[in-house]
Image (tube, rainbow, N blue to C red; front, side, top):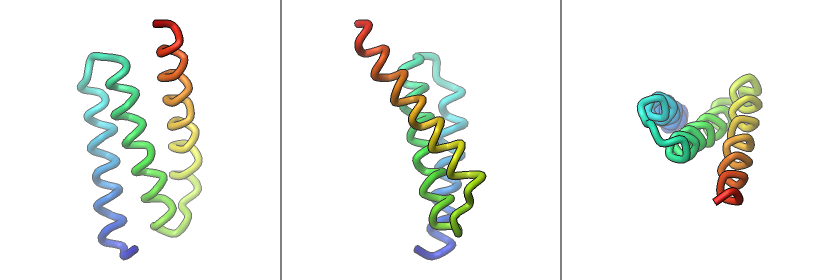
Length: 75
């Protein structure tokens, strides 16, 4: 993947993260934030294995999945 495409993925990730702060429904916040985190992980991988980007966003993604599944069990 070329650096321009990776940059667009990084910008998309930032957009999703910011968008998640605008939403009010917690489930939607988690989903949009998780999409942003996945984009940041992809960006980190294709930008030369940027571990300070990959690790926290990967962890946040797993946390979002956990909470989405836990909330589903409560309903």
